[in-house]
Length: 315
Picture (cartoon, one colour):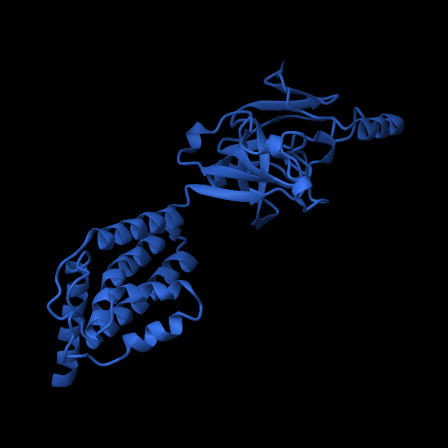
């Protein structure tokens, strides 16, 4: 019983020390302190998985992981100091092979003789810079304000072409979504796949498509981005489907509150709200912002790079 009590006290003291020394890259930390903190991390990871998988609290679970990983950075330094080596050796973990010697150091016993790091308490600008950058990048990975996508299909031509790589900015407020926005959202029939389409109809509006023209609340809207492939149009006309195909005729139908009607710019080659219905407003992830790279999918050489499309704003 006494042994369990001692372990409990040591565990609490180690966790308290980890938080109190979050900015302390000097001095040493004993092996027990390090492994108690790792045990604390396993508990947090297990709890964060529970929050994400069973309750859907993704952001909260990721923030909890930051609570573990940020103090761990300075603890890495102090534990390595305790074994008699520089804390900067922790950077070897960026390589797959480097993880092995790092953890061999971390499990070593304390070096008490001729250890120059025992009384080392000075913190320099590089320690502060490292922790600052670690926190910044961790927050960026957690919040994910920027997402990138490679476009594999032509449903958004000519605005976005096959082989374009785009940057999409996270949507913080759904109220900021407006007509003409290019949005990224989970594909309704299969939410594991992200889709990108243009917002055409907003909640509460009545939409109708007649002979390829879009009417909102009975008024024709201007769509300079819409593209109708001549061969597809000729094919529809030859079959007498220009007035009956969902490609050319749809509605009228009212868009429910909390939902969006979306379409691709390449109207005859786009699977969109005309086929699988509305997009839930709350599921919108981001807005397409600009093209940061463009490569002809049939030409991976330098000649295949479409320089004229790089950094082109998506409108």
